[in-house]
Length: 280
Image (cartoon, rainbow, N blue to C red):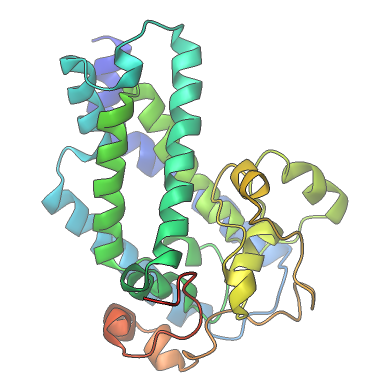
């Protein structure tokens, strides 16, 4: 069995190994060096947030058994996508593919903030009244399905190698847990880190209760897109400890931090002032 077939056969195991390893590391970091005091019980929030992760995983496996790696293998086999039209060095192809897919996810993130119908789905992620590594995984099942379809389309157009898609998926999950971590990083180290990766202090600004800040720092993995397109905000005015997390019009813990309420959030009437394009 060559490496290509081995990756295809073990893709789920590879992703789960990284997920549980990084989850454990960030969770321990949160206990040892927390950035903020949590408002709500970790047990209650984690039960709901991780329950949503389990639900989303089941939904994706039922709807898309092949997942993104399967689509990449199909595109590679059929010669679909830009990167399959030109012969480039393997390492160069993988790097281009990972960076391009990250940009697609950044654009998708901006889109779900700009279109009110999609914001209804995405506000499940923002409605968390606290901010820790489980916040990075709480998305409504309908948004997860939409995200997977966008990912499929990007893979078919781009034609990335299977290895690049696995690396991208692992990085996306890992950095989502890292930059949503309730962890303290010395400021001098954070300043250097955020030149290469989205740090917790950088992304936490995006979860501010104040709408202008919510529409900044859209990156999950690479920090460059926000700087390039003018959506970068270095720090919240009130500081990270004092800043209020969540959405101004959704403050009831039973509604926003319990699984049934989270699943119903897209159907709550008020939209608030958070969507970028408020004319819709």
